[in-house]
Amino acid sequence: MNLSYVIKEGFAGIKRAKLAATTSIISLFIAILLLGILTRVAYNVYVQAMSFKELIEVEVFLFDVDDDTRAHIQETLEQNPLTLEVTYISKDSASAIMREEFGPGVEELVALNFLPASFKVKVDTEAGVDQISNFVSTMLNQRGVDEVKYNEGLLRVMESNLNLFTLMGAGLGILILLAAVILVYNTIRLTIYAKRELIRAMKLVGATNKFIRSPFIVEGILQGFVAGILSVGCIFFIFEFMLPLYLPEMGLLGWPYGDWYILAGAMLGLSLLMGWWGSRLAARKFIAETYISG
Amino acid sequence: MSENTVIELSNISLSYENRQVLKGVNFKLRNGEFCYLIGPTGIGKSSILKMLYRDVEPDSGTVRVTDMPVNKLSMKQVPILRRKLGIVFQDFQLLQDRNVFENVAFALQVTGEKPKYIKQRVLEVLSMVGLSHRSKNMPGDLSGGEQQRVVIARALANEPRILLADEPTGNLDPKATKDIMEILKHINNRGTAVLMITHDYSIVKKYPYRTVRILDGKVQDLAWKGDKLVPVMPRA
Image 1: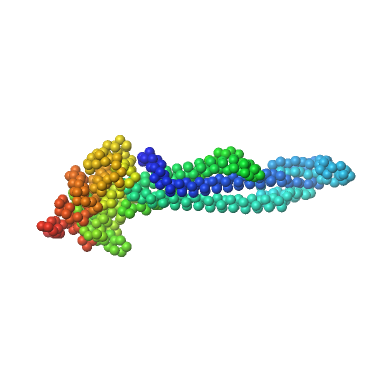
Image 2: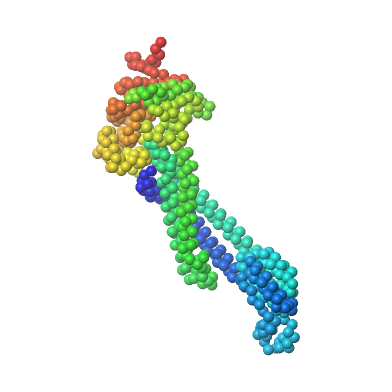
């Protein structure tokens, strides 16, 4: 296949059908931009939720146990896959903390030495409430453990909200993607319809369907590229300039995974993919259905 | 199919939405032969051409073009068949956004020829149809006759063994018609077989070649008897 011809024709196709190409680029641009915004916001919501979860600790209160039992409990806690960090709070340390938190008026109460020793356990932020509950039940069955406490209610509310947000975000994302593919598909179909004379002439002189299709696919990829670049530029503009300037109370919504090029690359890649896919789908169907004799 | 035959239709039947157009058609075109296909509108002349370049498939029978069993070809082989044919229509089917040179070069670009060969071959076929001086003009700048000559040049670019022409002079004035017929005659003299559909009996009379008509779904050879075309009786 004459590659330079295919690429030249792909570029020329955009020039020849400016309106259709512009419509296609704008629809893709809007879809990719919306997805980009959604991803950036969703990522930051997720990060926030995780940092809240980091604050949640499981407290394991002990009876008055000997050192061996305490060491055994600590070992059990440390071996659990959900455990990130275990801190031992002795009875004395607990009294000191109480003194520090409630001030000098609690001296008599502290003197009773009624506060139990405990372990503070930081759990993996990825762990679900049910996993933590299982962990708690296991610990309650341990000899020497009196009570296990954590903020289950808050965790459950947070988890269900996060699940709802993820579901809604994913649903919206899929809808946006679908709408964009349909738009690209229809625009390319219209472009192909507008060029049916060219397609008929190409078939007439013995061009293969693949050869006829190729410039349309190059055109779709180019449209995807332009739309991708525009949407990445727009994301920069919105999050780096507009939001800090006009909505500083929102704070800085960081780039997913800390680096700008991950989201920018994903957006550009997705835009190219959709341009390619939409044009390929339309070109395959409508070129095969075009007959020389009309 | 003998080596001397470039087109062979055997026992072809074709119908469109329950209307039978062709019934058991048999037809052969020999290498280098010129043949007119005549008959009233809607009788199935263009359908025969469409079957030859595989835009339509017959209900039954076999179609062969050179060594290719047309109605048994896979879709991938169809472009190879079309490269063996030069096809000319009444409506010129030129690409209006490309100049004359590009319109002709296009036939060679799609087959993957090298730019140097394309340039040389395009100038060659344009000179064959007398349009070398118009290579940079757009189709819109040309007369109907000139546009049809560009279409013929494009059809010849791939050096086909057969030229199929569906009323190539249908939209042209007498002068342009004469020019086109002279070109077709010249092409035929160089060894290309020509199968031409026409309604114009004056052409058939002025440029006498084998003439066949479609009647009652079958193909029938005709010959001039005085001013009339009459069926040729099959030899006993």
